[in-house]
Length: 258
Image (tube, rainbow, N blue to C red):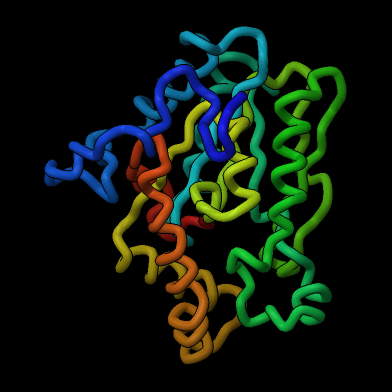
């Protein structure tokens, strides 16, 4: 039986491997940075998970972790689209942690509205339970929620994992966190990639995001400093638990969602 937090793959958990890569100038948080990764190479790696050793007949779940505005959702959507283009419709599906944001009503009840996006503002146990369903239920549709930025609320059943789906790409800030229930969630992941980005660029993306949803400049700045920044620092601590560190090619230079 796997220990909690062990990635579901045949090679060792990177957390148990000596961090010799940290001597490299390309190493980030004890993991080698794939500085030359391209969209095509990342898609090829996702296809490898479908066809390589250990793929078998089960469903493969690939996780993407990283701080806010690093480009996780941009990469996840591109991987899903490209795998489906190569392998056929519904071969790959998308499952975002953001769909498990607590509603604004629940955040208000808990006094967490100003900390929206922090670890405690998610239904983390619900997310972990859905990942288990995705990994084990192969003969019926499995629906997944999303987060609607226009509504500023989660919405139910926007995404669907079909019985024929063989790869699920799930992404979110806290997939590499050490706390429960993130360890349990990681037991179903074949690999977990840490999506890295320069803090200055993430800050600019976050500012554009908050201004775009109606925040005044001063309010947007306070929101980043008081909430997004500490959330990002929390996420960075999980880098050593990831399989690899990648930088997302600038697919959408005007700003990425996650």
